[in-house]
Structure formats: C-alpha cells, structure tokens
Image (cartoon, rainbow over all chains, first blue to last red; front, side, top):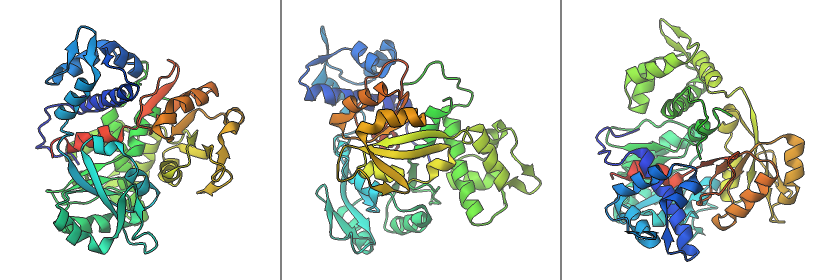
Length: 209
Length: 209
C-alpha cells in the first residue's frame, strides 16, 4: 500500500489540510476576495488558528501581507508545494456510475491530475464521451498506455473483476493504481496502490456516532 | 470538522487497516477459505506481519487457533469492534453520477451504514429507483428526516449548491454530513462534517510520484 521509500517531507495530515485550504482559496477567488487570514480558514474548518499558520509556514512563499495572505499567492504556493504544477496523466478503468462521476470531477485538473480517457468493455459505452474524455475499448489499453506514457490508472470496475483488471493494466506498464474497488489488490512490489477506502474514511468519522 | 470530544479509543490508522482486513476476509469467505494467518494479510497489504497482529490484538475475540485465525470469527470481531452492528440510517443528496454510484455500493450495509433513499430536485429523476432505493423530491426531505429519524446525509450535489443544500438539511435536523462536494461547508458547532477529500487522499499517494 504505502511505499516505504516515500520521502515523507510533508505529512499526510498536512497534505490533507493544505488541499482543504486550497478548496477555500478557490472559493475566495471565485467570489473576488483578495485577502484571507489564517483565522478565517481556521473558523471555516473548525480547527485552531495556530495550526493553519503552522501549515502555511511550510510553504515557500505564502504571500503574507499586513492585511492577511494574498489569496492568489497562497493558492499558488500550495500548488507548487504539493506538486500540482507537475501534471500527471491518468485514465479511468470502468465507465460505470463511479467512473463517470470521477471523469466529471474537474477539480482533478487543478490538482495536477489529468484524466485523459476512460476504458470499458461494454460495447454500448465504447465510443461515447464524458466531459470531453473518450470511452475507449479496454483492448486498446496497452497500446494507448505506451503511446501516451500513462502511469496512473483509476480502477472503478466491479469488485469481482478487480484483480484480473489490475493484472491486465500492470502488464501494460501501469505503476500507480487508485483503487476504488472494494477489494484489496495483489500487485508486484514496483506497483503502488492507493485504496480509496471510502468506508474506512467514513468509519473514522462515524465510529463514535 | 473533527469533534474534539470524540473518544479516540482506536486510532484512525487502525480503523483504516481494520476495514482493509475486513475486505480481505470478505473475499476469503466468498472463496470458502476457513483460516487466515496474519502473514497472509500482511503480504497482501505489503505491511509488516507484526503490525497486523498488533491490530488484531485490539479486538476482543479474534478467533485465533493453531492453524491461524478463523475467518468468519475474525470478520465478526472487526464488525463488533468498529460498531458495524449498530446500523445507522443515511440518505444521499443528489442523484447524479456520484450519488448513484454510492447508492449502488453494497459494501456500506456490511459496515453498518444503511442508505435508505436519495433526494434530488430534478423532476426527471424523482420517482426513480436505484438499487432498491427511491429517489425522492428534496422538498419532502424535512418530513422524511423526522419520520425516519435520519441523522446522516451524504452530500453529492454540485459545488455551487453545496452550502445552501447543507443549510437546508441542517435545518431539517441532520447532524452528520459526509461531504463529497469540492467545497468546505460552513456549519454550526453541533453538526459534524466529514470532507471526503478525494484529492487530498490521492495527493498523499502521488505527492512523491
């Protein structure tokens, strides 16, 4: 699951908070607000002001001025620090409800994830487009992967097909799998899997309800 | 975001791992295997055997025998410990691709989350059903909430409608919001929000790609 060799320069929790700040800054830009204080971010997220300031200090240039942080600069700092500017190509395997939902999620692009197509084996879906992305025949995946140099696959097929699909895309040279299926994949050591463990995440939330 | 008064009896990371083990055990049951060792779980997840054993020791009854853990008993232990047996009612707001995908996610039920309906304002969707759940008119939500005693809402509306929708369901007495929208919600202190921060999660993974 986790590559032990990963350089954990920034902890997972900080990465998570920084993306939430980025979300807020996006809203502020859309509403035309120029400045934001750490206190405003903290209040929206129900966290401590000092935590926000600590996180922001990790960024190289945070654009702090007398009246607060300059929204556009702070947003850019987060993008640079989290590596958004390095756009990474990806494709979605499985054009079902979840695959289509992810294909429509425009936020990914602002986070450096460029989803360039979807793949499916359903003849009724192949050839369609969603959010300007084409749904391609899964049999063309190996050639496509090579031609476009894609390394990241987002897996949204039914659980019972997850392992065989993973085997297929790994054979086509995929190195990173964002796994939305409710199964744990068996992969070689040079392939990294991120289990989008929706229930695990939610249970952290509801455990004490 | 996080309720500081939450009793963190089990850490978030352990909860996450336990749900992954639960996934694996489900697969083992489906393939008819009776026993599993911590080493088998560890190998599948590319983590240490000792970590798995440490996690399992947290459970009350792990069903360990000479030949390994009894799969069905271990699965039940995890369910009891993580509170799956306490079923919690929830509904989905927004019957778009993401809402429909979540409605079809049968795993939720085994984790104690009982999604009983969806709500939307689109007349073309209202009255439809997905996975035996009805898509209802959002205007009927307050009455429905009261009649069924629902406390958890899963929010999958477009970002620009997120805040007003949250205000509406909070007024109808929703206390827990699983937020799939790419915005940060402004909520009163007695309401808890879990931001399903897909990009934040994924960035923890791709940060070092």
